[in-house]
Image (cartoon, helix red, strand yellow):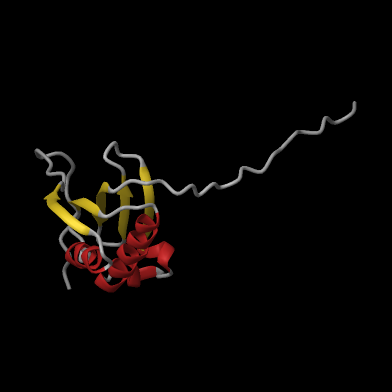
Length: 133
């Protein structure tokens, strides 16, 4: 039997410049990491960064400084696509929430509104055990 050759084409990553002036910034801040996604009004992701992709590892990902750098990098990419104004949606209890919002503003994006979308359970999962230090 002769092995067939597969026609494998490498998928090219196209970074087309979209002209989107208004969008949404979703900040998910957990105890271990902070993820910043900037989307168009329909929810399609234009740019995203996390504390891990910016270069932090381990417990340093959970710091406010890591969240600041992730938000700055994400805002820079979004501004290359023409983004000027964002509505911010914050989710999670992490330490990088306020820092990420401030650095989005400092990077030059105008913030239209800030909304907290942290999910609250109606007595769902049992919480983690209490830490005794």
